[in-house]
Every structure is written in C-alpha cells, then in structure tokens.
Length: 589
Image (cartoon, rainbow, N blue to C red; front, top):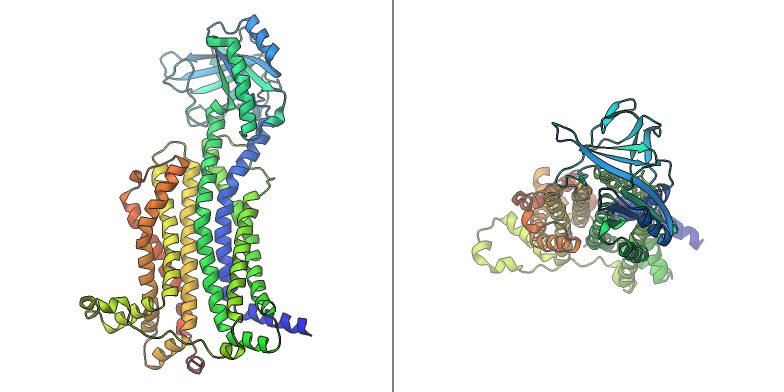
C-alpha cells in the first residue's frame, strides 16, 4: 500500500513539474554532449591511428641516404643485422619539368610489400608500363585511371589512385631536392630498384605502438640512436614523430583534448547552478506535501527519495541523448580533421571513457546536490513546513544610498532595482551563470579569430564554432530556467498587476526588465573573466594569442549573450499573460 502511494505521488511529481524535468534534461544534454563530444575526439583519433598503423603496416623509421648514389650493400647489411623487423628498399627521385614550376616525386619499390602498404582508393596496382598516382590534394594534380603521364622521359598509364600512409597531409608536401618548393604530384613504380636511397623499417612488435605512448617513444628513440651510430652522417633517420602529417594529427588531437578538459569546469558549474535553482524552488513549492509525509511517518530519506528519483530520471534521459549528441559532435570534428589530413574512416569502436567520466561526474554531483538540499528542508518541523515560506523583508538596497542616482530613477526603474538587488541568491545564480556562458562564447570567438590566421587549423576552428553554439544554448537554458522560476514565484504579484489594469506588454516588460538587467551585468562581467580564461587556454595549449582577437569579438560576445537572453524570455511570454488571476490571488502568503 505504501509502495503504491509512493509511486502515485512520484508520478504526480513528474506530471506536475514536467517543464522542470525537461529543463534538467536539456541542460544535461548540452553539458554532457559538449564535454563528451570534445573529450572523445582525441580517443577516437588515437583509436583510428592505432588501427591505421597496423592495417597499413606503417614503418616506424624512414631512413634517407644523404648520398646521390644511395646506400651501399654493406650499409644495408649492417642495418639488417641490427634491425628487429622488416626492411623495405626503395628508390625516391624528383624531377622538375622544363619551363614549369611543377615538381614530381617518384617512388620505385615492390608495392605489394608488407611494409607501408599503399591504400588503393581507385584502380589497381601497376604492371609494366603503368604507374600509381597519389590522390589529389590542394597541391597535387588530379589524375584518373587511364591518364597518360610522362616520368623521366617515359610515358606511363595511370593504373590507380592511392594514398601513401606516410603522406597523410593533404597540402604543402615539401620537396626533398628543391627545399623551398612544394610537390605537384607523386607517382609509384612497381619494381625492384637498382639504386636504394630510401629504407622503410617496421619493427617486429607492432603492438608496441599505442598512439604515441611513452613506452613506444622510449623504445623507438633507443633504436634510432643505434641506427644513427651505424650510418653516421650518411643518412637521415626519421621516426613517426617526425612525420609531418601523422604527428600533426596527434598534436592537434591533444590540443582538442586539453580544450575539453578546461571547459569541463565551466559547463559543470553552470549545470549544477541550474539544477540547484530548479530543485530549491521545487522543494519550496512542495513544503506542504513534505510536511504531510513527515506527519504520516515517512523518514527524511524516503521523502527526499522521490525528488532524487526525479533528478536521476532527468539526468539519465539527458545523458542518454547526450551520448548521441556528443558522438555527433565528435564525428563533425573528426571530419574537420579530414580537411587537412587523409584520415582513416571514423572508427566505430571506442571505450567512451570521456563520456562515461563526464556523465558520472554530472550524475553524482546533481544527486548529491538534490539530496543535501532536500535533507536541509526536511529537518524542519511539520508545523513550520505547513506555513508558507515568509517573503523576504523589504529593506533598502545599496543603490538607494546613492542619492544622486536613485532620486533620478522613475518608479518602475526603482522597483526593478529593488527586485534585482533584494534577492541576492537569485541575483548571484543568474549573474554567475551568465558570466560562465559569456566567458565560453568569448572563448569560442577568440579561438576562431586565432585559427583563421593559422594554416591547417580547421579542427580547432570546428571546436570554436561548437563552443559558441553550445555556450549560446547554455545561456538560453540558464535564462529560461531562472526566469521560469522567477515567474512561478511571483504569480500573485503578476496577477495583482493585471487586476490593476496593466496591459500584457506592461506586465511582461516589468518581469523581463529585471532579466535583461541581470543579463547585461553577466555579459559585461564575462569580458574580464573571459580575458583571463582565454589567456590561460592559449598558454595551456600553446596556441593562439589574446592580442590576435579582433576588437569586434569583445563586442559580439556580450551581444550574443543578450540575444539569447531575449530569445529565452520570449518563450515565457505566453506563460505570463496566461496567469490565472483568481487562483493566484487566492494563494496564502
């Protein structure tokens, strides 16, 4: 019987406060979606890099001879003696077309080798008289199967288009021979070279590589030292860490991960403020019912339990949807990496460590916050809880002491000032939440301004855009939630204004004026705090400069915050003008 009654009261709670439930769901979607979406990028890229490294059997070392005639047989034998893996011998040469600034590179080796397997995206491996062409990029010319190309005076037919795992960068592949110039195309001949000036060396233990782990790095550096001792100045030994494309992917992925870690704090703080304000108001509204349950013998934990369940359901639903939102954001940023690099396909499998971590933090924090807030209220005696909460006593606010300003304000502006400054808790939560949102918007704009001035930074640009969008959504949710609570608390006041003959526009303006004032304060205070955050972010990720932020971004950030303030209040316009005057004026105070 007790269980059935508890279930019914819990069900009524969900029906009665559906808007608040959806608000918590929405804030969790935005927060966890953004945090996990950004945080999972590095994990996905590392997962894809590991898979690509093994599938294409990427070489751990690229050894290039410094002599025109390449390596001697003795040098190759010495390397094979110390090499604990597979060695691929290759000839690499470049030619510059006459009366042209185009430079072409040609590789000649057994293309069906297990080392550095080319990724054929069209056509097939070349036979005699045929050649493979590297895929088109910003700088490489576009070829199709069947095209005729002339290499070193000999005409070949293009048998296929491929991607070399060592040439992942889609642009600006610098020439070896003409150091200040860039390649216009790369071709591959499928035959054993007579001269060997390139060696690709893959270590035997392929599981040692783990997305640039310290263990891998230490082992590779030690082996590089041994190779350099054998070859001396006759060759250059390069590892994957010195491959411009492969290393840059990891470097940018690491920066993305660092950005995600920094902004977790802000999204977590704003989320908790929204949940706290929502549940505090809910507990105040339910004082009478809580008193009745205490009288019937329910324990404090049993009473608070249904409210904890309320938040748990909202957080779980929001978290489930956030997993999809986060995955979508991760995919978008991953695709943005593909603008600069030939990325492997988006990996389907991942441990989702960042998603579960951020979601667990949000879930535990919201539950504990609800539990402590509820238990604080249930300590009261039933008689005290049955009495409506006493309204805040009217008293002078600080602005009243500044006579030359206060005396010049109209009655409605004095009323607004009193309402804003008298309720310090509401003032603090609204302003702090909006400062957080404004700071995040400014950070997104600051990153955008810096990214557009740097080559090959599309991945960070996608993050900055996501940051602006999610921060704006966060701002709208914060304002909507706090304004909705404000309106719910003041139905009697709103009804009184209606009875006195105030028009719908005058009533809504009376409420919204306070919101816009708080929004303005939060947006403006967000600028100095935003400056400090951006400076910290740029130093932390070693990217960007505060001085490179455009002047209009400092104006646009608070304007974006104010715009979403206005947008969210418009959603409450109908609720205000539909206030039931009779029911509201009958409530006890």
